[in-house]
Length: 282
Image (cartoon, rainbow, N blue to C red; front, side):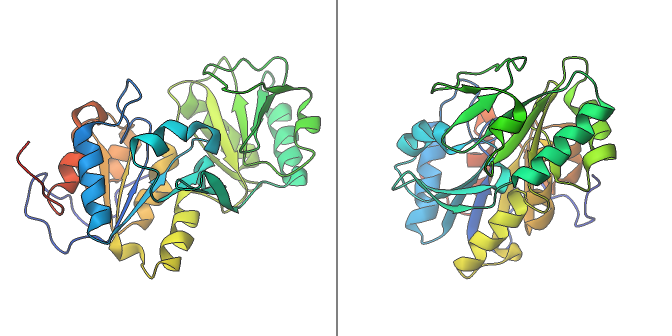
């Protein structure tokens, strides 16, 4: 995805108008590689909120993976989860809005991918629960007992995300191949270094739900600074008035962003935000 021609900002340069909304991805962007949120990052996010501005976490994570984030950030604010399918209230730890993939659409995607890409296996995120086909091997802690069964049984009700894995393709190749046969049926993306895709309802992305959410607070795209690292962040970065990639981001994200900050392990998000919400010397 090419840049939008707004011109790159110079890291550390004097900022223009201060954003009113901070929208940031979590894993690989705000969260360090060890799973922690640094004190420096927590402090600047607190200053943003204390100033009356809005912080929205915008992540591919399901709500069941938000417990530690809620705890580390003071149980404040909202999170767009599952790439836009769910809005999660960090204070109450409840889903307050849903944009799911309907069963008929999910099954149409499954059939198209099975026909075109033999060897694909599927899993589903329902928000609170995770399910997968017997051949699908989760590569992260599930956290709760998973449902195991045929994919048509797992999508008997609307799902937050359909996950697709293929052992013979990297994520970029798998995404390109899958979009050729199912790109008009649903929203396909990835946030993985391996062959794993994430599929949402058509038109549902981090950007679409973030746009609705900030509008409810009286803001628009020009009020938003957005941070990301992977292809599932591209719609959000394209929509936001100001976009920032972390140094460890996917090449497509680096190319699309207005600015590149330090990596997630170097508190790149915090460093960028401190230009508008400065604190004590660090």
